[in-house]
Image (cartoon, rainbow, N blue to C red; front, side):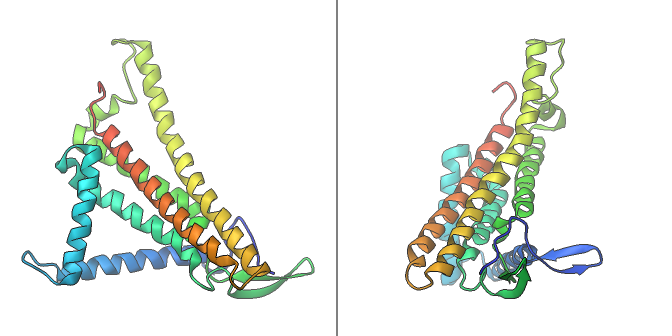
Amino acid sequence: MPHISLAPEVLTHIGSFPITNTLVVALGITLLLSLFAVILSQRLTFGPGGAVQNAVEFLFEHILAFLDTITEDRHYSRAFLPLVVTIFFFVLASNLVEIVPGLGTIGLIEQHEGETLIVPFLRSSSADLNVTVAVALASVIGVQVLGVAFLGFFAYSKKFFYPPWRQPYVVGTFIGALEGVAELAKIVSFSFRLFGNIFAGEVLLTVVLFLMPYGAPLPFLVLEVFVGLVQAVVFSMLTLVFLKVATAESGH
């Protein structure tokens, strides 16, 4: 019987630091995306390139055009592109990796309370709340950094720390405090939304594969691809919207 657990399984330790199966997958995805970016950047030319360069240029031109519909400024779109696209591809890869054959079903056979369980060597990193919280923190911190970069530290801080002796007085201070709470709430909202959807899909696939391993899982695999894509789009687009709001003057 497959093992279903909210917490990731620990494979080994480096000193006192646990190495979990979801951490291995997250590091693997990060390494692959980084290698792809480095290799691609070394092969790019200013003139006409090959099929790969043309495809990448085509993709990013359309991404920038889409970002322009929200930012309404190509300068903002170019500034937001690295963070938004990195989050999108990382979350998408983390979500879709759960449909890789054997990812959650190949592992160690252990006895637990009289039952034989399969503890997987690898699991989708988005099914680990630690990973989704880390991505949410990267998104929220990135929003704050770009907000300060565009508006300056003091102008940006007025959104959160408003002097009570200036109009609208205490109301402005109260609204600033609510803005601070809202930034913290984004971390919880981001992380639990992504974790809940992907963990539920992982459990569903595991149970279906165990009960009906031939044919029946196919519709659920298609559904998981769709859900994984939607969650990546939602995560990255919300980051983009928050960036747009963060770089607007506090009076707007």
